[in-house]
Amino acid sequence: MAWLAMAGAGAWRKPLDRNDGAAAGETGLVKGAPGCSFDPPVQGVGEEILVLTGELADGEARYSVGTYLRNPPGVHRTLRTDQGCMLFVKRYPFEPTDSAVVRIDTANTPWLPGRVPGLGVMPLHAHQHEHAALVRWAPETHFQPHGHFGGEEILVVSGVFEDEHGSYPAGTWIRSPHGSRHQPFSRLGCTIYVKTGHLPVTDGHAG
Image (tube, rainbow, N blue to C red):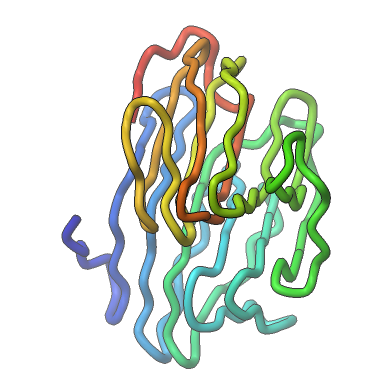
C-alpha cells in the first residue's frame, strides 16, 4: 500500500479499516518523520498503539520498539517522535468500563507457554470479551482448527504466518469476522499481534 500524507508536516498513514457509524473508529499504520507530532483522537475515542520502529514519546516517557500503549477516552496525551517511528494504531470507542491505561515493554516482558508446543503468548490487555496479545510461533508450529466469536484481527509483526487460506508475510493485516474459522500454522516462525472478541457479531465484513 502507498503511504498517504496526513494533516501537518512529516506524517503519513496506511488506512486499513474504518467505521463511520455509531461506533466510529479506524485502524492503520502511521509513520512520522523526526520531530513529528500526532493529533490526539477525537472526543470519546480511545487508542491502542504498538510501536513497530523508532521511538515514541508522550511527555511522560519514551517508548521504544515493541511497546504496547493503550489510552482510554479522556487520557489523550500529545504523541511525538524525535527520531522517527512507525506505529500500528487503533482508535475506537472503548467499552464504558474499560478505563485501564496500559504501558507494556514487550521487548522485556516474559512469554507464557501457549496451548500447543512451540507457541508463546504475551497478554497485552483483556476486558470482558475483548483480548489483545502478542503470539510467537516457533518454526513448524501448528494450531488446531478454531472459530472466532466476536472476530479476530491479526498484524504479522515478523516472519510468515499461515493458514489454509494463504501465507502472510510481515506487514500483513488480517481481519476475520465473527464466526469465521481457520487452522493457523507457521513453517518459518513468526510473531503476530492478535485481537479477538471486538468485532460486532453481526459484522460479515472481512479484511
